[in-house]
Image 1 (tube, rainbow, N blue to C red):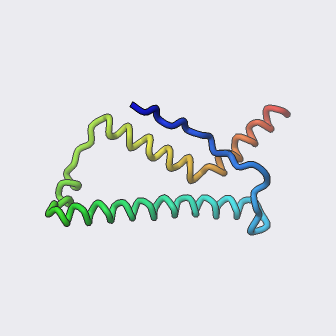
Image 2: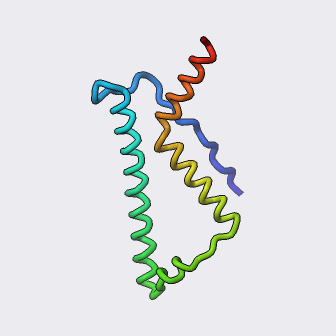
Image 3: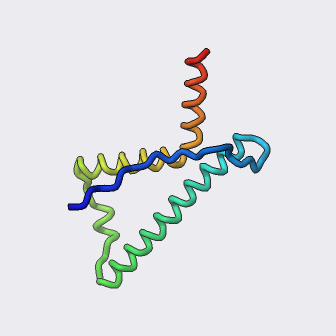
Length: 106
């Protein structure tokens, strides 16, 4: 069995480009871009699933509407939501960490 790849911490080096003359506008643009990218990928995957199911004669809507999640699935969903929030709010989280570190130094 192949070893799973190690997760690398993504931290940009150097100064971030400033597009709007203020860090807040750029931070929100980055967040919106990350969220939009996630949404586009999810829509593409959902479209693929629906097309594959339809090609096989599978009707999913009623099954999806009545599906009950077990605890493992709910935990996996929670982890996926947290990972998405961490990516979308990455810059805010990074800024909060810097602010917290600066307060500790004071």
